[in-house]
Image (tube, rainbow, N blue to C red; front, side):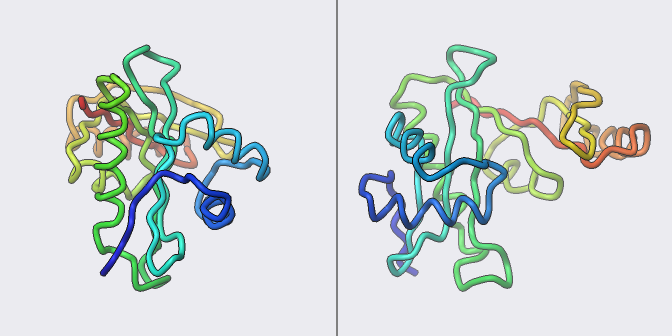
Length: 177
């Protein structure tokens, strides 16, 4: 399978990636805002293309928490049952290229919030959980708790779901690059 992973550099790329992002992302923005964000840090916005079609994206931005950190905002690839590109390692390739870009910029670590059920992807790619965040139906934050590891975090995740009747309890993970 021939997949090309690259920064978004052309207008054609922008037009291919924007609808993909709209379909797979929590990020809500108009096309012009999308283009401004991509052009502001093109090396931190990567896309995977197969047969000329966007099949994955990865985007981050400098963290509000620390000067030497990048927050991974989204990594999205084709979902199982949706395409020939699902579960083919595209996400892992995207995140590795993103990590290279982060290192080139001189950042030391990446943090990311993992939606429930996908934390295994980050664990497989060397990320370590350090916190849980319980959120409500409108994404309001109910509680944050530190965790030592994934196993103890899973138990605490169930506890927080019940305690708050939370919409979700996500893992926050980090990786030193």
